[in-house]
Length: 342
Ligand code: DAH
Image (cartoon, rainbow, N blue to C red; front, side, top):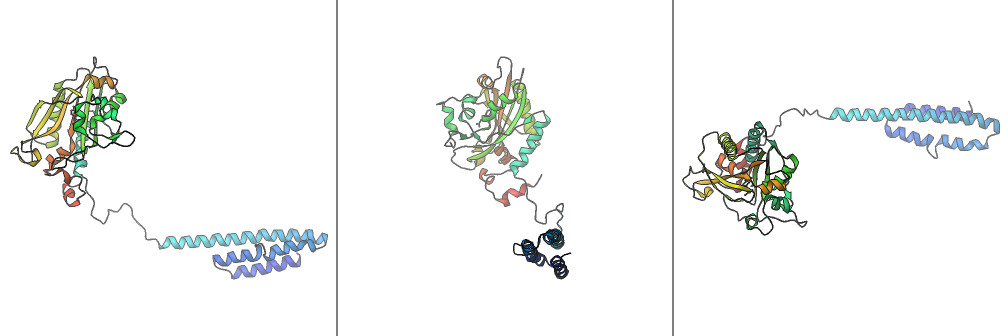
């Protein structure tokens, strides 16, 4: 071996034996292999050697360069691994399956009742669908038989977006979409948040929840409607509830009904929740208007169906005896957490 190569090899071996840390190995790499490193300089100096010596020394120096590079890389990797292992050993292990030390949260009363009703309807073969909160004016009004300039629009003033769409005023807004999606026959339940420009009081909120249901098929009649509504209320209240059925006008049903229940807050005596009438409107319903079926692509000559729009927020108030609707959107954990988890 040439003296230069031999000297470099020896010097490198000595320094490698002393170096211990990552930064020391990095420094060594610069010292020997960097742009101005000793080995690099030696390679540059080859051109001054006589021809036959240049060839042999060049070969040896290049071999040496590869050896140095490997040796340093190995040491650097080992240092990095050791550092990682040390960092890992300092981490306190976390058992993600352990129960939280903090008090667990509770489900919102609306969620509890919504899930309960969804289970009841699912057991009767209904599909549960999500509705949009932002809707087209067409779906919210025209498609449910409320044409432009119809006075029924006045009762459902809402928040209009710049693009002409609106925050849906009722879950009926999804009827057209659902009829088009499933066709006839179908049994679908579609809960959702609704919005209206309301004067707020104990029983009116600008944001509330409804649960709409539709059953369409051959020979679906008012008796089917009454059967399902009674079953629903018995299951929800887990006791006999006094109900009354009276004619009600809704442009999307014909005939239409108002199904009221005797106020469970005051026992029918009269209170602010029932506006002193002793009755609470809970379940408007009716037979789907032929226009609505037609617009949904269903032949009204062949199919009939019923629809209902359950006031989910109201129902929750009745079930839990919540006197003021505003409690539900208040974010008041003290009030909301007393209904428990489920
Ligand atoms: N969409 C009506 C409202 O918000 C509620 C309603 C009434 C829904 C009658 C229905 C129905 O499906 O048949 O006032």
